[in-house]
Length: 258
Length: 160
Image (cartoon, rainbow over all chains, first blue to last red; front, side):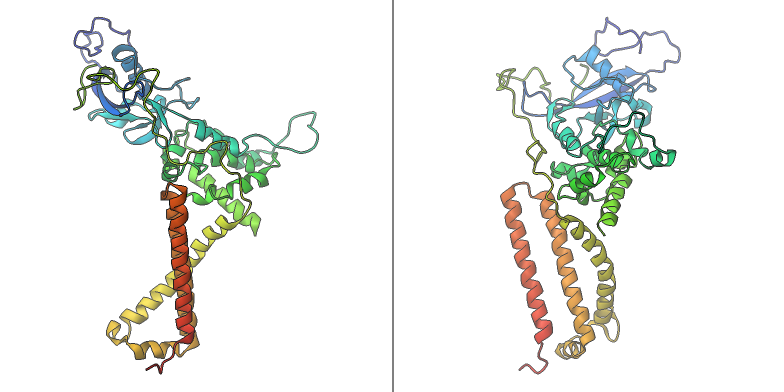
């Protein structure tokens, strides 16, 4: 990003003039604002900025926060698609702001940015992630073994590792869970992300608590609430086949019970 | 900021005195039935799995039963005009059609009731609403299934 200009008069941040064919375009960002310290109502606010379409939505949010309105609140940590902090609903679809290029989401029309759904909005784009992480904790997302600890690594064949490779990619951004219509209506449902992380251990040959996790997911709020709408698979910024993982847990439950 | 949407009062400068400030923030909108540490743990029954399996299996059987039923009743051999007391009496004289209709009644009712139970579980937010809607559903289901079964088995073709 270019050096921020300080001499803005009309409120629009403009890049330095003088480029014959400037890569910059004017894009409108329509952001859903909520600040409980000011009002109990949410409000859509438009920001027009000059930005290179090859930049990401996160860069645009930075530009707005740093140059136009410092009260804009959102989460981001690594800004490179690994920490999972900046999942948000961009043009009606859950994505990571740091992995979404502006040119890919049609900057001709206003780009809507709002907080992910199904979780309490605390301010602007920041939501309360506690229920999400509670579901994650409830599936025991850690290695459970019996007996003494070996003196060397717990070896695993490449095939055994491959079995759960897809679900190791999860970054807990909540894009899947907050895209799930069942989760919107009933927060008691574990949600796709928790099931993905249970899957990661259920199918790990080194783990010995698979049966326990299956039992947890066999309950009223477990995998049987999944309606296979594939919203989670569409939303996953890591390309995890979330719905497939959920179906595999269902299959494991059925085959192990009969 | 450069431009704003229709509502001119931007966040930060609401006209008049705001009801909310740093010490008295507005209530946030919580989603229905949040998961917390107090959420009940697994009940250790397989009911939900059986319900899920039943939906799939009964669905397959119902496709055959219902399409067969519709064909016989509405399309083949004169269509809907042939249906009368005599037609029903004739069909239920055979145990095959009795079993067919009985299976269809039970499967369709339980399939539908289970589907509606899912819908209620999804959409009824308050515990009380959910409970009473489900009680109503179960009562209606049991009543219909029992009445239907009774009629199929005690049907009297010579009734006056």
